[in-house]
Image (tube, rainbow, N blue to C red):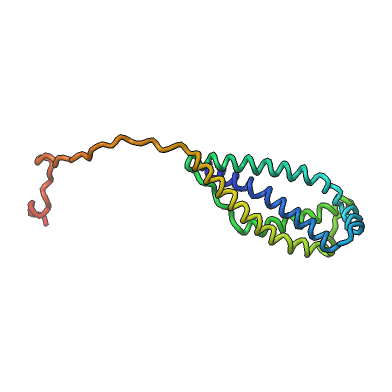
Length: 189
């Protein structure tokens, strides 16, 4: 229902940031292990990284999804519905899982043979290690962005409608015929 939709909006903010962080960590791992540009380029082409030229377009589309989700989160906050929180463990686990799958799929598509040895590549462990600080940065950024969206939404929320003030009514005591006798007065105690 509504709670699932609000959680989806939060995920649509989180996933693009996790993707961007994971890709930056991926690039840094290759720069770290292969500091010479010509060697790095050769390894990237050999291991199926030719698609990285499309990365700016993918990240741009992800940023657009994130922006629309933030606007929807602000609109929800304007209606009095705060965004749902996301579990912190996801920001540690998902980038690690994404990087691992990406490394295997890249090599598999480049060679046509499943790369059982992908985890032994010199960039694999540094790439995994770099996922953690970028996952933490994504987590902090998502929390901040959702908090800002919530505050913006509240700032644009319509003012509550003032109710007419009614004087407090004084209830008259019930009529004597409606009073029930106590159990003691009836001799039943």
